Length: 441
Image (cartoon, rainbow, N blue to C red; front, top):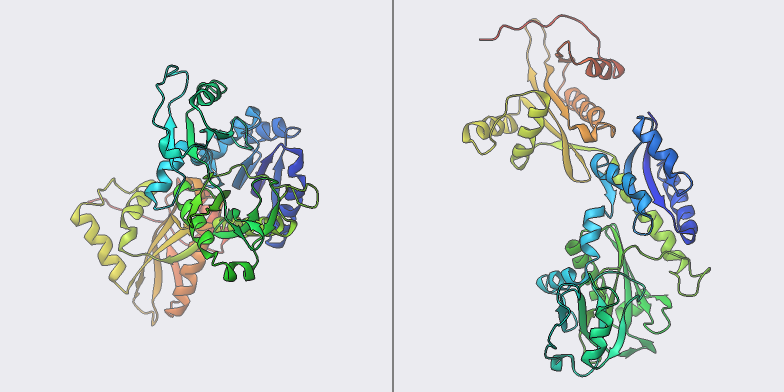
């Protein structure tokens, strides 16, 4: 079955430049990129259903505008553990009313905001006290972007009543009108793009919508490092890997998160559209994403520690071990003893920081042998991560540690029913050298 490193679903024709840059970046990192477009969607779904196509990572830039992509998204949600802007996480981040409250909890400054229920639920809503909004305010639906449904510089309640009827099933936000300061000749309104741990702050004129990168000199001269800090906090709040956020430096000195989370992010190149993102930033985003996918889809192996006990209990149950309660002190103590014992080898394989596999082994002596052997008692990789090379990575690390310990051999046992595992070990050079017997007591 062909397995691609990264699948990008896209349908907006203006994404073509970004896709080309992403393809180039993936090639640099040795990643294979598979594109699914409206023209290839049916074929991709058919191949997936027939077991003829698989992916290690998935990024959906299509389903928000084309529901035909939802079956692909649903399949990826269930089968692909590495996803850029996972669908359920993105849907939560799209809700400005939810994000407003989450931002406040995270300690971020936001405009004074009044959240209204959907018109459909409460059409005859009595006017709230608008005094805190100081005479002018924005009216925004909780969902959507591109300024659709937004009324700027509103002043009276009748404008709110009219605006709420445009999207009657959505909540609405009444936001304090923010006037940005003027800094270095710029309106101090910023768009900060966040991508997989990196931040790209830009001046963004709220009237012309034109970007200009915040230079290192700007950042130092005007003390704009807080923009990066705020974007990092927002990333923790919303859980997305790629988004932009609007931050305004108000005339009263506040740095205010104005429009929360923008996703999907318009990635047109500035060389193609005046309001597009600077070309060098889009190229950097593509490289950053390829780097992230590489890191997320390449397993890393480390020694287990006590914090891994709960996960290892679950993993070894998948292998066929009896169900055990990790909070049972007797169960936990056995794991602790193995982790602390220098003659035991306890390894964990991670994908993107998530434990997906484990190996337990024993360095043991054999009569008439002057050196020890490493006996691998158990090796397991959770089903959703079995196409990522985690099992091979665990064995490779075990071989390294066995050599370091001066072992003459690595040995293990397998039940007859584990045919796929037999092929796996034989592909790594292990030989079938005996028959395994057991007497249960």
